[in-house]
Length: 138
View 1 (cartoon, rainbow, N blue to C red):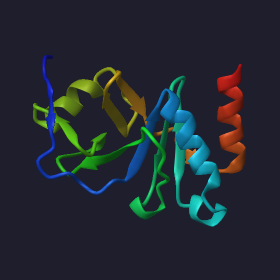
View 2 (view 1 turned 30 degrees about the vertical axis):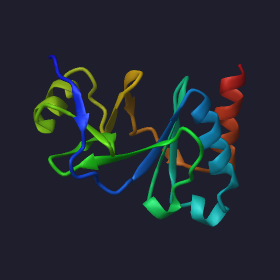
View 3 (view 1 turned 135 degrees about the horizontal axis):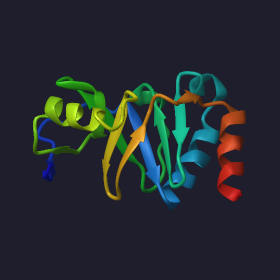
């Protein structure tokens, strides 16, 4: 399936943030500084080079290099950057992706191109932040 990314004509409100590479560490640091009560409303997941935080826009942390994400109405299980979208119908793209990736929801990220499963997100606790940092050091 061939497609390209294009600018989002009507960007949705952010429902999450992603940091990749150096921005991942910055996002994790910013998240650790968020008041514990506010952090209770946030969910967190990570992979080898990315951190994804989801939750209410007003609770999302900011740091350099972070980008914002949100699902779209036409494919609620497919999260995308708020500023970009594929040039294909999202419901069809989601069906194609779901053939290989049965988990839901999924974040489709353009650069570097990757699919990040969001179903494993856990509450953004101090313990989870420490676990992610320990995993990155090993």
